[in-house]
Amino acid sequence: MQSSKVRHALPRFLFPKGCPGGAAADFHVNNLPYGVFKPKGGDARIGVAVGDKVLDLRVLVANGLLPDKCGLSDSALNNFMASGKAKWQEVRHELQKTLLSDENPKNLSACGRLEEAIHASNAVEMLLPANIGDYTDFYASREHATNVGKMFRPTQDPLLPNWLHIPVGYHGRASTVVVSGTPVRRPKGQQVVKGQDAGPPFFGPEKLLDIELEMGCFVGPGNELGESIPLDKAEDHIFGLVVFNDWSARSIQKWEYVPLGPFLGKNFLSTVSPWVVTLDALEPFRTATPEQGAGGDPKPLPYLTQAPESKQTWDIKLDVEFQAPEMSAPETVARSNLKWMYWSLAQQLTHHCVNGCKMNPGDLLGTGTISGPEPENRGSFLELCWRGEKEIKIDGGKIVRKFLQDGDKINLRGFCDDGNGTRVGFGECSGVILPSN
Image (cartoon, rainbow, N blue to C red; front, side, top):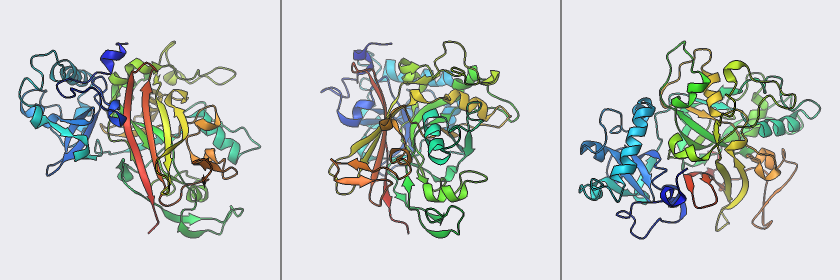
């Protein structure tokens, strides 16, 4: 791992007073996440976050400062995602070692392109990072699946028979994936009165609106139809990660999920953070997934078996921030971590296409709710209130919730932090609940 001092640096020619505070501290030179933004009066283009500024890659390509013909001049990241690991590393090296290096005589300041290529982050509109053709959501956290099983099947094994054998997932709705800051309109649908699980249903606004604290990954190079991606090559097909909130309508979901699973309770909105953090930026925080096949658990089949001592996940801390309209500041109501997730993102991708399913650049995979071993690590209100049996007390008990009310704001944050000043962050993944229309 590089030293904390180097990893947390920002170019002095851009930041003579040092690193900005707040969310801008997430985006130093060894993070350099990619996103899509629209400057005032301009059109969509690809950028990189540097502190509280956005670096315009289209300008750099046009001036011969970054490679052409790999998608950096586009209005979405799909073609750059498709260009592959070698090209991603080439561009990252050029940004870090040349254009954003104080010591390099060919940096942005020296070449006279600084003003043209830099935008203030608070003066641009962030857009979805990619054109998302397909979106799949998994159910990969053992703690979350166990909690849900205990709530809804208290007399049975909380994990269904297939759960320890496959990364369970379902195909979501790509058209309703939105970027952070987009309001959340309370959905309407069929529900049943509590205690009358067999119906008849009524139609109305969702009563039990919830979040799901997740992470997502964007697929880079895809595979051909009929071919699969082996586990040891899967990360070469992952461009980067985002924080992800799969908003959930629990009443609608409960009525509809048998026999075919999630539908209207899940497809009304999902929110992603706008900046995609690459696996190269996350490399110093790589760690092992929970042990599989231990304590009497079945071992995964060979195509899903991780190599001995492999580290297929990252120590990414995840926070759920809640703010009611009457609160002056948000309060953290849950803390989780990607490292607790049982099935890795590589396993999810490999299983997804083991049958020859074609994956395309820009496809999005969600992890499913990420919960941990303690009550404060639960990644949904369903778990925090334990299916409505407990109250979630906020702001010293002045505010009580079980599920979300109109006007509530949720912000999910993800970051890696070694405790010594080394930090890589993802920015915000937020939404405010609007009344049903």
